[in-house]
Image (tube, rainbow, N blue to C red; front, side, top):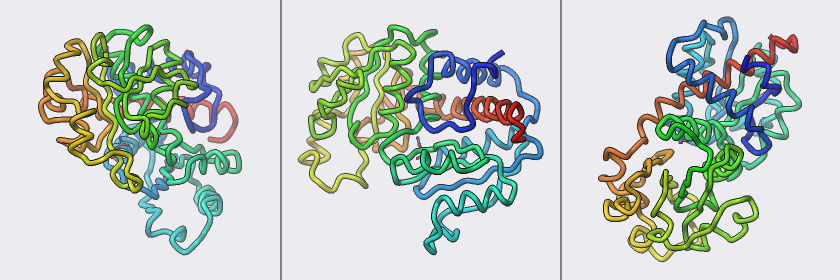
Length: 309
Ligand code: CP
């Protein structure tokens, strides 16, 4: 039934996805977690177009594609003709000409994929674009939280840290709000601008005040590579104000501890909460395979319905 709820060639973001669309992915992912699906992508080819590093996202997409029977091209954006100045669109059109049906892309530029996706027959799945969206990360976050808590409606989710630079924060805000959760963004005004309130987040500057009653605390990675403008005084000051420590986690004894990785241990999160019994960090990684399988499967159904197989 789920495939009839899905009417998209691409997965570019969670902004604008309806609750039934999100539920279609989460429910199909749950089914795939229970039992292995048919090799639905047998005969299809996938290429990765990553201009930024990745461990989890790329590996989980690749595992998902292989489990569904797809062939994965050994194509690397960094050693491709993109490095000689070929445009993203020309690169995509050439991959399409080679018979690639799925392009999984991580690009530094926010919105770059939205411009390219309508111009190709290939399906484009966003694996992170600049600060804008990282939809499959948020989907695996939603999946894991729903699995741990049994629901998403009404949950209080505290998202801590560098929301300004975070595509994970934006995608989670869209997805969680769509699913009826309450989202609290917590951080200094330099990293959590008041403007996030317009997107439906409650803003809290004091982490100790934000944590009581939380069903989840999601630590955002402090994006050290994007911190050239002194968003905070020092890493020690940041940890003192916004690091998730054992003492702080005791304020939220029912909270699932989440982090999309990679972790800056001892900065936004200490070892005890990262590795303790409340942590869902590694289950999130496993679940990332199932949600990506679900995304591929729903898009493949769409492609068959539209004679793009
Ligand atoms: N969560 C995440 O996007 O991790 P990677 O950068 O390792 O893919």
